[in-house]
Amino acid sequence: MLKLGIIGCGRVTTMFHLKALKQIDDISVVAVSDLESERMEEVRKDCGAQRSFSNYLELIDDPEVEAAVVCTPPRLHNEMVLRAVEKGKHVLCEKPLAQTVEDCLEIKRASEEKKVVVMPVHNYVFTPALSHAQNLLKQGSIGRVNHLKVDFLNSLSTYRAKTDFRFKEEAGIIEDLLPHVLSISTWIVGGVKKVVEHKRWKKSYSVYDNAYFKFILEKEIPLDVALSWTKLIPTFKVEVTGDSGRMHLDLMKSPQSFKLVSGDKTTKMNLEKGIGQYLKLMRLEHPAFKNQYLHFLRVIEGEETPLITLDDEISIVKTIEEVIALQ
Image (cartoon, rainbow, N blue to C red; front, top):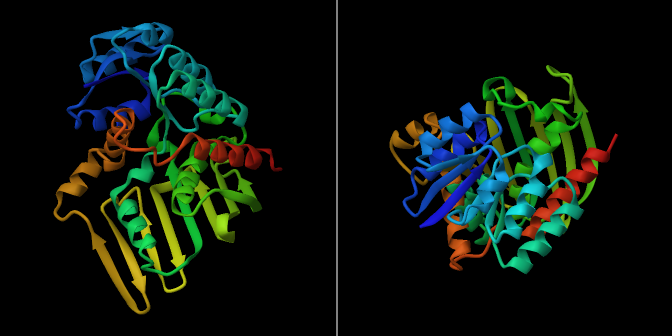
């Protein structure tokens, strides 16, 4: 049984993390921490934790806590992850792991020294449809991949975040959404080699809330990316084009299915049948979060190696830094 302490009791914790953890018998939450006491107590009761701490340092000092889950704004990630690692705790940290490459390197050095697992949350990599599609790609089902197109279009108005950290910086949308895209493209093809086009604009908020980027990935494969905070119905569409076909996925709305196009033939690949999968999504029980926690547990136990490594995360954060610096 892996015993967790959760730092941060905001929307991502209540909407996704807790729902996933309730489906896993081999992981339990024993402590929670948040600056807002009422919110913290609601989460503590919901997950059955025995203790709550307004100071996160007390949580990571708790000898019963074996791993810390960091669900706080990005500016706090580096310090919290390092403090947990120094205490010999494994860490699962919401994306991005840190805001700079230098901080990511420091976390990597510390985790290697303490021999603990540090894993950034890139939950969509663990979407069943994407895993199956990746297996087919390796088998050459659409030939050599030559183009990726990814649209991560979200709605902040319906998300109703508890904090406003996304609006502290003009380019907050980049730090918020681009890590999701880059984790997917890194896993499918590889890291970013260069940025070749960039646009960002303001539609509904005082900061940039929409953006478009064109990257060149490893093997000279182009990646077109659209990001939005103002989409009425959220979606995470991935289109992979090869020499002899295409794959169409929506990792947010269709985690158990995707379309495979070969010539004039379109095949819908269904990994799970029945209405149950849709009821789970209505309850915000996306399978990727559960799968990531199971992966985290297996990596700690030495049964699996990380799908997204710290070196991958360093590359992702490097790209985010470069993109934010563009004018």
